[in-house]
Image (cartoon, rainbow, N blue to C red):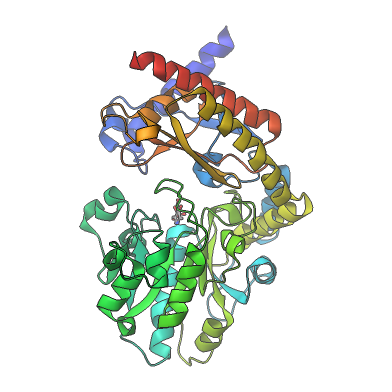
Length: 458
Ligand code: PLP
C-alpha cells in the first residue's frame, strides 16, 4: 500500500543519511558507513520499542540498562514539559541554584544508604566516575595526604569512556582505545573474597585488591572503585560476603570505597541501590541511567558526610563542574522518576518479577543442554551458552553462541545483548515495569532462538 511505501522510503532515506553523517558510539564505524543498516526507533510504549518501518520489538535490555520505567511514560514527559515551560535550564555555578536540583538532592539523601547525604551532579555515568576520582583525590589533599592518588578498579569493570573512567574500565577494547589512559590506576582480580579478607595462601593473593594495596602502599591509594554487580563485563554477581569484605578492607587501610551504581541503582537489582543487599555504605556512590529512566541525561556522585564536611572547610573554589550539573529539567524528571518508583512499588514488583524470570531460566536450563550459569539479582540477569556445561567447556571462539542466539531473538523481535570475551553471555535487563506475561514472551523467544541455534550447529 501507499503507506508501506512511504514508511520504507522514509527509512531508506534515514539509513543513507545515518551512514553518511552519523558516527555511532560502540559501533564499527567502517561497517556502519558501508553496509550498516541501523534499526531506527521512532516510538515506544512500556517494554516495547517500534522502528520507523513499523516493527515492534520487546526491549529486553531497557535499551542500555536505563529505561527502567519503560517507554512512553507520560508523567515523566509531563515533568520535563512543565519544567521546560518554567525554565528549561539555569546555572548552578557560584551563586545560583534551582528548585528541582535542590529537591532532588534532598530526596536522594533520603533514599541513599547511610550518610550519603549530598550530591554532585553530572550528565552521565562516565562524568560521575571522573568526578568521584577527582573528589577522592581532593579529599586526601584536604586531609594533608596528597600522596594518596592511586585508584584500584577491578578487571573487566565498565566505568565509562571519559579518559579517567576509560582507564578504570577493565574491558580490554575500551581500556585500550586510542591509547588514552591516565596514570596511577591499577586493576585487581574481581570477587576474591578470601584474599580481601587476608588469606595470603590463596594463589590469587597478589592480584587481589589487598595484594595491590600491600604492594603499592596504602599511603599512595585514594580509592577503590567497583560495580556492586559487574554489568557490561558480563553481569557478574559477587559472591556473598565480597562487598562487605571490600568495605572492611577499605576501612582497614584508610582508602575510600566508590560504588558505581550506574546500572544497579534505582531498583534494578530489587533494592533501591545494590549495596543495600549487603548493608554496605560506600564513601562515594556514582549514579546515572536509572536515576531518570533515561528520559533525561543525568548523573551524580553522592558523598558521605565525612567527605562533604571536609569539602566545605575548604576556602577556595571547587574547580570542577559541568554546564549541565544540576540541570533543572533533568532533575525534575529524576524527581518524578523516583516518585513513581516509590508510589507504584516498583522495587517490590522487581522482586516478584525476578521469581518469574528465574522460573523461565530453570525451564531453559532443563530443556537446553547448552544453557548454564543463569543468574539474576532483581532484573539484572544473564544466561550463558557452553558447548558442555558439565565439563565447563566453551564453544570454539568461531561459534559465538550468544551472538547467534541474540540475532535469532532479534529476528523474533526481542532485543538482547551479548557479553563476554567468548561471546558466551546473554544479558537480560528489561524495563522494571515488565509484567509476567511479557517475561514469558521473552523466555519463549529465547527458547525458540536457542532451538534455532542448535539446529544451525547441526
Ligand atoms: N558505569 C557503569 C557501571 C556503566 O554501566 C556505565 C555505562 O554503561 C557507565 C559507568 C558510563 O555511563 P555513561 O555511558 O552514562 O557515561
